[in-house]
Image (cartoon, rainbow, N blue to C red; front, top):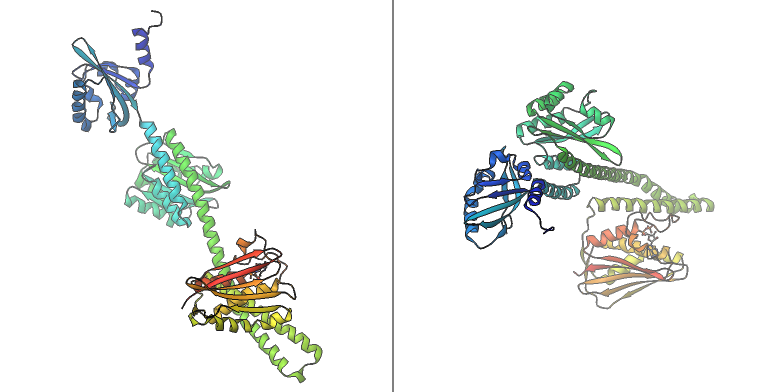
Length: 530
Ligand code: ADP
């Protein structure tokens, strides 16, 4: 038959297969060993044929293998996957173990049985899977670390021992690197590596791999004899001491690049093994991850530092501005109190000065409050208060503003409202911010209504105006600090709502705004019952 696969063809196929194909007799002695098996196990057919299959199995699995093989021999099953239920492993001629996947079959030949095993070396697949898992976990871990020193430490801890026996992570500083974290499998050596950072920046001499990286940010591998080559080219005593103690066979220098800038370097040291191409790819993936995390952490540090600086500056400035402004306020009022001292024209100017000082004082107070909110230092002392009394008193101080703009201000309070917990002064401040906005953004002759009604376990206070309203896309931003829909309004600093929110939330209440452009705005907040 022309289509029939001949014995020769089969033999040829077996020879070129990259899997190991091994046959055994009933006594488990090897009778056939293809090229694939030779490549995987390191034995030649001459050496291995006639030996028992145990030679290819790690010692601790041998007993179990013998039992399984006997059971299989007695069974009616013709073929079976061996790695289905448990991990299996092979051992190479050089003693190295490796993970494997295998199937076994049995064919009777007369009175004899021939066993055949097809086995695949899973080392690369397993390693790839492990690396992928490692990178995914590392990514997660690094994404959740914040400051740069925390991130540096995480990177070093992740690199050792998975990728190397030791590592140093250096931050780029000018024409050198400052070690920011280190790790080693031997704590004594790790201590020496830490010394490298404490000794200050490392300015690499011309032939050092670090100098190469500064020149061109691509990985540099030193192997074998990394130790002697590093000792030859290094001058820094702490670094030399650590290198001598580690005595690395190989060293891999990986540039950390973020946003096109060389921001640091990760050095991996291995005491015995070298780095192969696979290792390099893996390490490069890790370095990319580390660079990104480090860059983010630094941005985070910078942001925090500048926020702190801004708040400190704001605190100092507003505090120191308060006294001179208070003096202007007081002196202008004193002048106005003695009419014969001032002529009509001067009087008008002094009134304007007093008004300006008043505004300045309010602004400074807002800045200080925002600062307190940030620092979590806005303290309130709530006491049980009748909402009707609270609102009537609070709105009293706003009357002049309303009258000035010819706006009517109505108060609608549900009867018999229960008492609420409120810090009178603070709630008055919040309310006057809300009513102040309503006045500011309403046309002359319009109406503002302040409503108080009972909620489930609180009292809801709302300020309704029929002013210009707020565009839907702006609504989510109104409570943000310094946010204003248009910068032309010089009366406020965009802090009023942020402060009102801080005050209401400090009371355990909620605050929200609804608005229709052209129709009006309703700002509401709740106060918990006493
Ligand atoms: P400001 O002190 O500048 O008024 P706020 O935090 O109180 O700051 O308000 C922020 C911005 O929200 C205002 O600049 C304005 O654009 C908008 N806004 C707040 N309340 C109203 C309102 N009742 N009607 C229209 N726009 C408002």
